[in-house]
Length: 126
Image 1 (cartoon, rainbow, N blue to C red):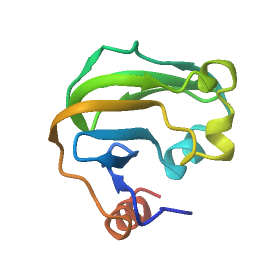
Image 2 (image 1 turned 90 degrees about the vertical axis):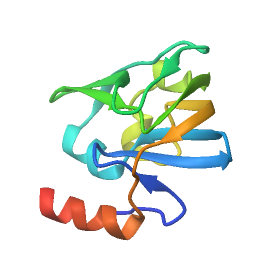
Image 3 (image 1 turned 45 degrees about the vertical axis):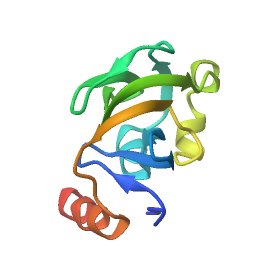
Image 4 (image 1 turned 60 degrees about the vertical axis):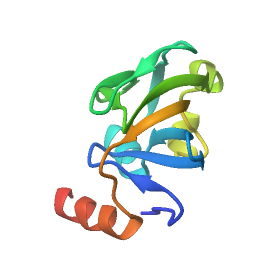
């Protein structure tokens, strides 16, 4: 599986891409989308919603399960990827282009993994 080096990874299988010191994009990893199967629905927060480390801020439904998206940061939702609302299966084709939210005003970041560390975690979970 593919785990881009420039991203950071949560143990709950979300990826985070820092855009600057206080803004990041968040999505789910290739490992997570592969385990879930074909996505059929995405439920996203509203712009302005606060997110908290370790708490769900969105969910996706696949043919197999409903999966909570857990925030790796404390902050405020500054944008949502509305494309996922109409076309959730894009997550399956391009999980690292299919970000869920942009989070701004980041005040704290959870302990995230490098791509290499995340690969080890996934190998253990497989």
